[in-house]
Length: 162
Image 1 (cartoon, rainbow, N blue to C red):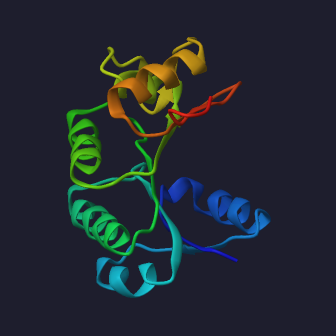
Image 2: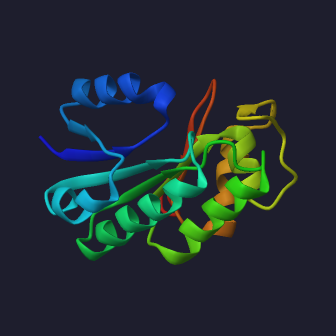
Image 3: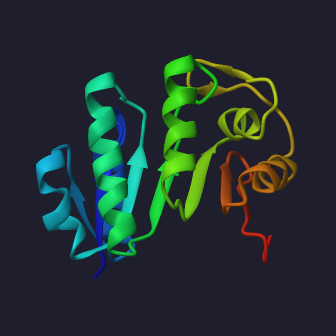
């Protein structure tokens, strides 16, 4: 049962935990940077969801990502609201440039904006109607990281597989 350390949106914590449990994983919801070294030693993955990001959480994201990279733990980044504010864009861009990210997951609007196109969202809600596969391929071409676009039809592009 892999331990998945989740730094996640306060709104989705129960859904995230229950989904991981249903998949056979062991989720731990963390919000404390001082435990990063201890809990990531035993982790199978780290989820960084910036849905409830704030300036005081930036060091938490960075410390968790740093230890995950040191321990060779895959990091999943969910850039909630990317494109909605400069703060979210800057935070996501910094995490992508400074740390090894194994997968970027987001809705069509977030990933569309991550690919360098104009943000098409209403806050954190995607209003883009584009093809999720096209969006995932465009973002992968820019980020060179596996990309999962969620929506009515999900699309995953890893570089080797679609």
